[in-house]
Image 1 (cartoon, rainbow, N blue to C red):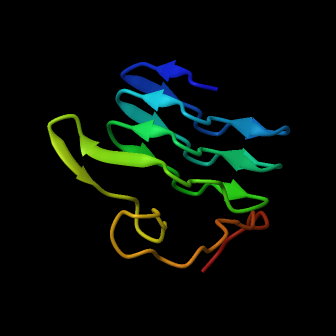
Image 2 (cartoon, helix red, strand yellow; image 1 turned 180 degrees about the horizontal axis):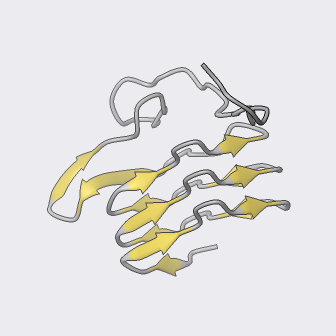
Length: 111
């Protein structure tokens, strides 16, 4: 895809019904995918995140393709880091893949 995104890109609460194609995309700053739903595969192969990237409460039908993707904590720090629980090939100790599927609670009081 080779798309370049600016300093603040957000797909928060988005729903991708088709393939989410971000191959070789470049995110120059914050990238937010909070509470985003991916019904089909998500392709982040060779993507580069040059700022914070958040997938809090995201749900994937299948594990996303993060092969050869790079994340830098910020533009000044070349060290790569991934959110807790995420595996980054070649970047530190890989964590096992765990689907990020959240159940919607039933209405009413919850303990």
